[in-house]
Amino acid sequence: MRIGELARKAGVTTRALRYYEEQNLLVSERSDSGQRHYTEAAVDQIRLIRDLYAAGLSSKTIAELTPCVIDGKATPELLDRLAMERDGIDRHIADLTRTRDRLDSVIASASTNMRTGAPCRRNTTIQ
Image (cartoon, rainbow, N blue to C red):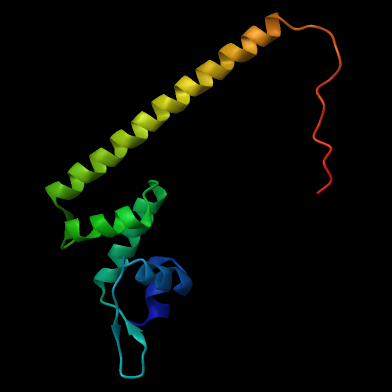
């Protein structure tokens, strides 16, 4: 199928499909006149790519993962890699939670020690 038909079936723009190709996430065959042609399996591949993007993965990571899908089924390697990505997100959430808790502590401490005085100066530099 041609690029416009794939875009309609997969619910993406033709620009997105060209981007996926640039990122080595999608492969097309070229006709003698240079038109892109895709297989029917490309629709499912696009859906997977979109799901992985929505899950926060980078195009580089997605490019590494897509070969781990064979005939629309996840390989054990894909599942292991996705679990590793999830674990990384869990670590990041824990770090952000600790940072927020520290900031809450600073706010609480500053609130109990407030003194009267001049308001904070704003940056008055001309841009």
